[in-house]
Amino acid sequence: MNDPTSLQPGTPFEGGFYGGQIRIGNAVFAIAWAPKAEGETQGAWLGSYTDVPGAGSCFDSMANTVAMAEAGSAIGNWARGLTIGGHTDWCVPARDVLELGYRLLKPSTQGNACSFRDGDNASSVPAGYPYSEATPAQTTAEAFRAGGAEAFAQSWYWSSTQYSANLAFHQYFYDGYQYHGTKKFEAQVRAVRLIQLAT
Image 1 (cartoon, rainbow, N blue to C red):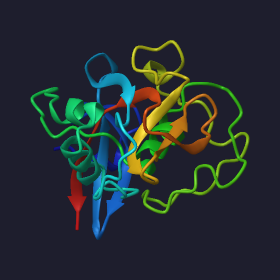
Image 2 (image 1 turned 60 degrees about the vertical axis):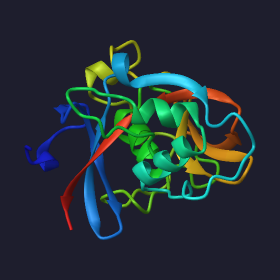
Image 3 (image 1 turned 135 degrees about the horizontal axis):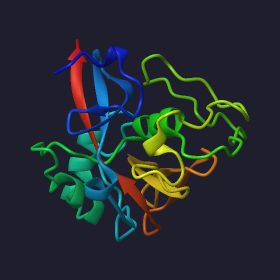
């Protein structure tokens, strides 16, 4: 694997596209966002209002996704069933991983939501601070800009992080607003891989 530290967000990387780094415990992982054509879908977080033990991490996307799949989540099972670029370890991004998708690959020129700590991310490397109206700016990665082949929809995206028995965290890729929605809500999902870099 190439050292990703010099890569720009949106650069082809490990079966997808480089999207920053996240800390899980003492280990640091690089994020690879799946290609849109193969690794994006839409659906409810879960078909029922059920507590899902093990899906509460803000950073451990795989642990959350496994718990979701075991609870019968269609999007959890979809992610776990993906094979893209020969890789089978795709998952639904945890809340702080999803935040980096917006921060580093923002599709639009729309001003950012900054109502209450939107963008605050203690898990990212380096740690992320709340958005201002102007920061983050639209990504410089052409394929991820609005209208590009890999661009995130300017819509709600699910994370794999549960908020409560009824709710889970999602993020609005129009302006970055972070909130929790009812699990039966249909939203976009983009799969990720997490590749360990250091301990």
